[in-house]
Image (cartoon, chains in turn purple, red):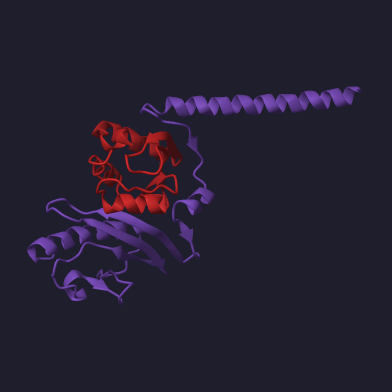
Length: 158
Length: 101
C-alpha cells in the first residue's frame, strides 16, 4: 500500500470521526433542551415532512394557501366551538375560507347576518377591505368565530 | 398521551418555547388511550412560521373504538396532523382528552 493510499484512508477516517462527533453533539444539545418527560430528539422541519403531514403549499408568487387550520372559539357558552379555516392569498389579499363551523342551531345562515360571502362549499369571511397579511386575516377569523358563537347562543352577532 | 392530557400550564409553556426553533419535536412511546389499535405512538409538535400555525402530529394508521371522544380527536387520528392557529388551543385539545386517557 503506497503513501498516497494511506493518506486518503486517514482523511476518510478523520471525516467519518468528525461527522460522528457532530451528531453526538447535536443529540446532547437536543436532550438538554427537553426538560419534559419522554422528550426526544428533534428532526429538521423540511418540506418533505410538511408535505407528508402538514399543509404548506406554495401555488405561485401571488397565490398561497395554508391548508386546514383549527381555531377553538371562546368558551363563554357550552357546546361545539370548533372552526376550521383555509387561508388563501389571491393577488394581494387574504381570504379565510370556512371549512367547518358549529351548527347554527336554527339561527339564520344568511351571509348578510353572519358576514360571509361565496357559494355553498366555498364560503369565506366577509371583510370591508382587502386584508393584506395572513396574521391580519387570522385575527379577523378569530374575532368572526367568537362572534358566531355569540350569535348562536344569543341571536346577536358582534 | 396522558402527560399531555394532564399537562400543566407551565409544561405547555415549556413546550411552546421549544417550538420556537422551528424544528419538529417528537415524543416517542406515548401511551395511547384504551380502545386504540396500538398501545404506543409517536406524537410530534412543530411551529410553522410561514402559516403561523402549530402542528400536532401522530403516527398514521391509528384507530380508536373506545369511549366517546371529541370529534377533533378522530380527525387527528385520521389525518395524522392537526394545525392550530393558536398554541393555547393545543392545550385545550389535549385537556379535552382527559376522559379517554
